[in-house]
Length: 462
Image 1 (spheres, rainbow, N blue to C red):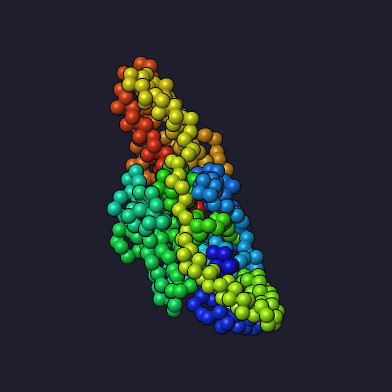
Image 2: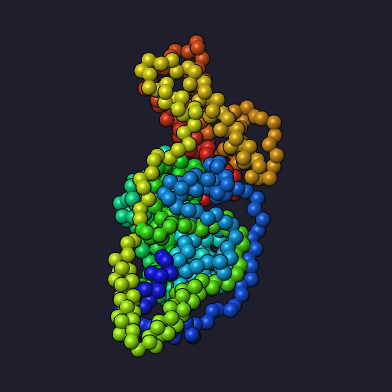
């Protein structure tokens, strides 16, 4: 919200002379908080989960592309200086490595001044960002009525039917990935609204906290992984909800700018963007100059009545227009998630032919699936601090993943059988398969991709 609108709302509903005196009093008496907050240092990073510069499966590169589609300017940073913030800033905190600072004092000041914060986290420092507003993070998620590809750690939850008219705009379903849960606790003055809930209707994965009559708000999500590339590219509902989320705290006729704080590793400074009543230093300076100029003008007795009339109009008109202020503008309906690779386009082209020879695409799918298994095993070795050894045969590689708990024994056996069937289809001596059978095999490969794409080791994206 612009500084001018905030001033108008604070001054609304009073007579002109009283308003001028009140503004002058605020200008003369407001003081800024002087307490300095020591920098909070983060532990060293040793992975690239939630990295906006990472276009891999666990990065946020596609989230920034979605922001551009939704006409949102995303200012990406991994440190936060409270002194740089204005009261109308929007912060999007994703999987922070550090909390908001000692006692969350600056965060509370920012919210009281009208700031808006989106927090998406589960197992890092997000609990420290949510707790001041009565939002408690629980590691145990709630149940779901359905799961993507039948995978238990990918709950598929209602979007537009649950999230509301704005956040759920054209979101059929949202797919979470190893989510936590949020429950509301009693914190004086704060109220809560569940936006997305698990099927038990008690635990939530999206919840808003607000104070009645104040502009500052907090929107919390219990799963940052729904924003990563693998989830927004594969599931359209996740992409559209990400766009809605980015615009959730923007306003219709203002530029939509969001500070994206991903992997936040340092917080320092003292918040100075708003003092008593949420007026920023710039707003108080403007009001002070305006009152002084008006006082000088009114000293001319011949123009006194005219200028009093203009002063009343100058105050009443902004109040009238602010009362008609539009809410946030929805993003455009986005195109489907991109990132369709050459292999998938090739398979789709083969399936468009009713009597095609599927041996060649079967060979390509078998090779693709074998490479994904190998990559998952290499990623496992790197995450656990080891060095990738010489390449193993496919059965030994799958056995390694099963042994380390990355995939179930049943999933490993199913992937191994699938590769074998594809290799049989690719064999020229084997009987050819029809279009229906090859479509089933392609769907099986899609399932295997989901399992292997979400396979990491001890530092999984959760």
